[in-house]
Length: 318
Ligand code: FAD
Image 1: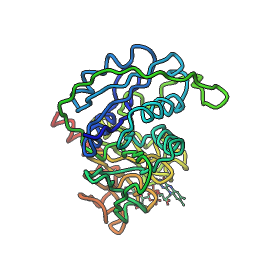
Image 2 (image 1 turned 45 degrees about the horizontal axis):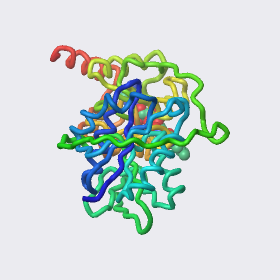
Image 3 (image 1 turned 120 degrees about the vertical axis):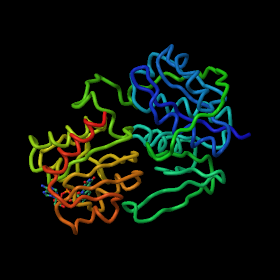
């Protein structure tokens, strides 16, 4: 069976859910091999979990440098393995870093970048949701190695048996002049909540929330559901919520099981970042708001009346 390389996403010694999604997507194309890039001792902890999602092999690319730089060590490792293993494809998560890794790798290897897949098919084609979700497109690489980035949350991770046999990869020393060095890591606001692009539930607030203080109503509902908090660009631009939580064309793309939009009109640029959510719930006082066109459940009403009731109801059922 053809070998498919999967870049392993991990943070603080934990595997990210996106790794399992990428392994699941890769299984459509062949036999996945996981590529772990990290500081010495990283891969050993992940082996079993990677095998349980079908990784037949684990390429271990470890060095002290790998923890100090963004992007470059990952591209180097994938390029090295791709050179020796001749895989059928490379799959990475379409996170901010993953997108850059995929782009650089495709350029370096003269491959084809297939980006932001919401589905991967066994014929090598991918499904994409474009123009704010207005069109679904099927794309396939016409030449070179396909480098596929998979939208976080779009593919449901499913377990499968694997073997995770280890193979060591020599990483070249990173050239500091050509790489972005990590100078410090600080916890973000809302650090106890799930990461926005990985959360299975996202509760977002828009301009309708009215102020930074009132965003508490969004946060309370999110916390009752164990959700991440998102925001529209209008809410961010108005200073209601920090920019790293913006969902949309110029923000983050999310694809959770449940997306709750509070006081968000549903402009195409917002939809671009959330339209592939599995279930969309919208609360808006304007019955004509475009968000209702894509909502599975809609409540026409004042969010300050509806959201607290939802929060109470969720709390009661816990
Ligand atoms: P509004 O459009 O002002 O809508 C507020 C909504 O709240 C209204 O529908 C109103 O009926 C409702 N409301 C008000 N009060 C209440 C209440 N008490 N209870 C219930 N409902 C209430 N936008 C993004 O979100 N993400 C992006 O990444 C993004 N990128 C962009 C990129 C470009 C190049 C451009 C041009 C625009 C981009 N935008 C983006 C902006 C986008 O076009 C919209 O302006 C923005 O999404 C609107 O945000 P909103 O829905 O919060 O605000």
